[in-house]
Amino acid sequence: MKEEQCILLTNWWDKLYPLRRKFVSETLLNGFEKEDIEQECFLQLHKALERYDPHLGVPFESYYKVVLYGWRANQNRSKMSREIACQEEAFFFVKDERTDIERDVERKVLGEEAIHLIEQLEETERGIIKAYYLQNKKMKEIAKSYGIAYKTVEAKKKKALGKLRAMMA
View 1 (cartoon, rainbow, N blue to C red):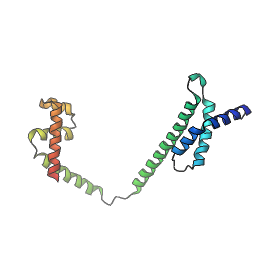
View 2 (cartoon, helix red, strand yellow; view 1 turned 90 degrees about the vertical axis):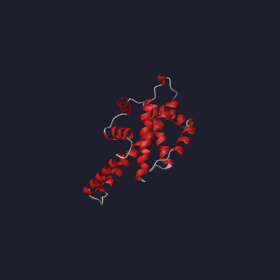
View 3 (cartoon, rainbow, N blue to C red; view 1 turned 45 degrees about the horizontal axis):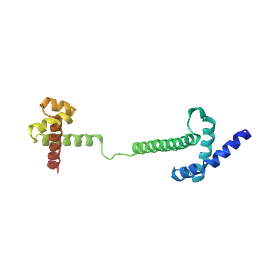
View 4 (cartoon, rainbow, N blue to C red; view 1 turned 120 degrees about the vertical axis):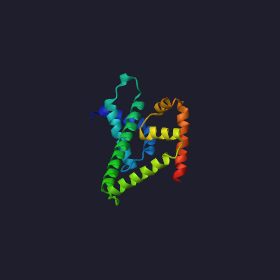
């Protein structure tokens, strides 16, 4: 590194101390000590000085801040993806005590019970519930087919769900 670049880096390092201090105190990343984050700030400053283009009209302080916060966001993102991968791996290895057949039977029984309860609703409520949940129709389509307002369909659906909840309790 040239002497001129070292001086520039040192000057900016000193000038940006308040930003660094705030960034380090706000940044909590697993596997990173305070000194590690401080060191990363220095590395990101070096990269920012290399990539900064003064002709874009953005002050260097703002550019450096974006670089720092972008680095932290990337660290958090990669941490989350590692955690998700670990969770998926752990989920993969967890043995389910119930077999697929038991789950299928349970779903079928619950489905039959739900259909039986739906049949006890008023005709319009039953039609709305079936159309929405079993036929995957949109509320607008249901309103049009019944010749009633969207809000009315919404209210009847809400009322029907309340009745179903009460019947299941």
